[in-house]
Image (cartoon, rainbow, N blue to C red; front, side):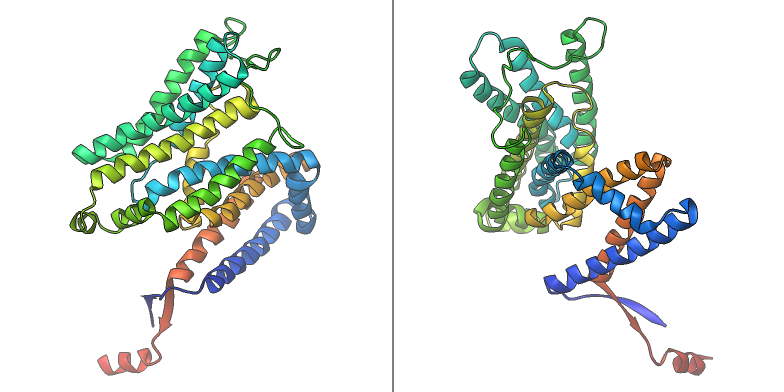
Length: 362
């Protein structure tokens, strides 16, 4: 009766029209589910979700901070993913960057002025994140190991290393936590600029988004990454060393994750825990995929996921609903958005003469 065929590349506005239609349909389905299972007015529920994300100035700043951190990790993973190196080690790379910052704040906080301490934190955070990413890159380049399993394993190792140092630095002893580092002196704290303590983080990630877009689209390195992703044999044919590109790209990817660790520890949280990455290393995979590895489109994808998360929390507390209900609505919306990619890439073609052909065959 019908068959699937691959579409030619759609104009960007057609693709986004399909995605918007999928979101509208998802909201309609969520409205039906909400009415059936809770008896609540779905429009009131959507209004509560909006309030949970943008209802006050503080909530808006928190949302923008969460957006910036998720977007930053997505930008970090993008060069590796574009190269088809599946770096799932963002969590560990963030943790190692954060650990480097925390170590500087704790060990050197009372020995160095901020003008020296903060640059040192930046350098070491970038270095620790880069090293944590380049280890599996070297193994991949030299021995073709499985980067997916290797980078996942590195997450667990990083978590245990951070847990070890948390016990060493815990305050008070036996608490299992470090608490706010240098709360009285603010040694190693990144300076606050603008109206919020989150503004510096947001500004840095905004600049990084533009730089990454230019790097991936217009630079020689970005071109080499795309060619490796298409075919390593082609890259070798044109005289580019695949191993060098893999290692260089993962150094960049890890360094950006290390920077996110610095922004979390030195910029906002001022402490280090094993959960400071907050699952962003995995959520960023979805963001990068939804945006087709386009840095600018990742802003919209990150905003959607953060908004849904904040909205789900708000409706759970406002209506005393099971927290899982908000996740159900989020899952429905994501299902429709991801499903819309099928209709962007493929089309159904119906065979008008299918019945006649069948009669002839009989």
